[in-house]
Length: 281
Image (cartoon, rainbow, N blue to C red):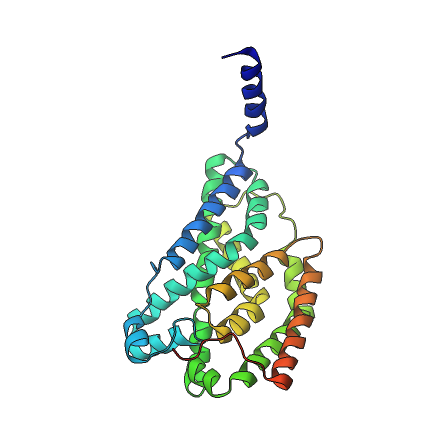
């Protein structure tokens, strides 16, 4: 190898050198996990109870509002509910992972114990955090039980009214002091700590509940009534919840999306446009 070529290779090697440390490992792990969650969803490798009935007998698109909830209620077993919760959990993990990367990195960086201790603490934190999102599947199931005809039937009967209400209510929630206070807490710095696994799990539960409440309008109104299995909406809403957690101007994003949501809802009420929501095959 010539001297000039060897020098060029050494320069490229220097530029590409990454010093392995705890925070880098955490970010890489979270990104890999997120890829796994999205591949499971895209490949249909998550349990979907009642899917055969939904597609072959009921003629309801999987991306329709309330389609999955209707299928679960059709099956009507505890096993179907558990499978739905797993599906919902994977979906929420995929959508929340980018938003959680910064906070999780700071949680790992603030740990003052050994490397092994930090792994146990972070694993306990994430497992309990994920558990909260899986349990949050109860919210759309409760909506489906409470609404006449379920989410699908009610949205199909009163499409513009339901979508308009979902957008307006989401906008009001985005603008509320409650939402913005939760957002500030979610984006605050993590104090130095030496959390044992139980303590880390407790913090994961607390942070998970705060995240669910922070995203309530976006995920439990807009996404549920637009169709949670609609990949386009999933990606778009993932972007919303991620950028609104930017520490410097994330709150302004929340306010901006709130105003846009209210305006969009009012336009749906007044103009009654064609909506990009599949209701029937």
